[in-house]
Image 1 (cartoon, rainbow, N blue to C red):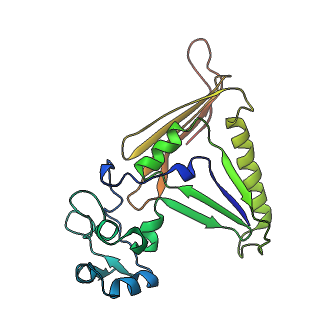
Image 2 (cartoon, rainbow, N blue to C red; image 1 turned 135 degrees about the horizontal axis):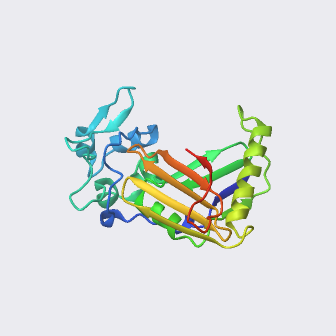
Image 3 (cartoon, rainbow, N blue to C red; image 1 turned 30 degrees about the vertical axis):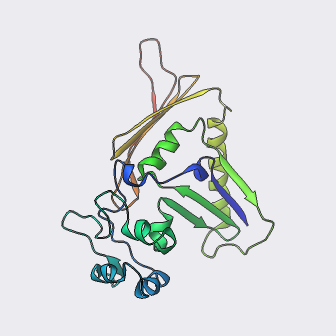
Length: 231
C-alpha cells in the first residue's frame, strides 16, 4: 500500500476554542454504528447525548443543531462536550477525522486536509512549498474497483508535472494568498512573469467551489499580460 500526504499534514493540530470559526456549525454529522453503541452505554454524557440525537432526511442519526446552526454538544468555550468531558476517543468517526480526508484507490491511499478548516488553510498558505510525502509498506492491494487505471495514471502524471514546476523546475515561484473565512485567493508567480491565480469558495459542508481560475503569459512593459485561460 502506497500512502501519500502533504508535507504539512502531520503538523496539523486543532485550535479548539481558539479557532476563529467552528466546524460544529451547519453540519449534520451522521453518526456511525460504533459511536451510537458507545453513546448508548453508561457515561457522564449519556442523557445529554440522547436528548440531542435526531434523524436527518436520509434517516441517519445526527447531533441536533440549535436555532443558530450550532451543534447541541458545543460548549460556550468553543469545545465539544464529548471531547472535553469524556475524552477524544469517544468522538464519532466524522468528528474525529475532520479536517482530514482519505481517498483510497486500492493500492494507493491519499490523505489531505480540507481548506474549509482555518488552520488547515493556514498551513497550506504558509508552507514554503507544497510537496507530497510517500511511503510504501510493500503490501500489494488489488486495484480499486471502478477506477480506470489509465485515467488514474494520466492524472498522477499531470499532477506530478505541476508539482515539479512548483518545486523549482521552472525557476523560483512566489506564492501569495489570503483567506477571509469564505474565499481563498492564491496567486503563483514564476520568474518568467507567468502567473496562475485562483479563487476558491469554502462551502459550509466542507467542500469548495472554484470561483475563478486564470493563467497569464509574461507581463509586458506596459503592464498587460495575455490571458492563456480564464474561468
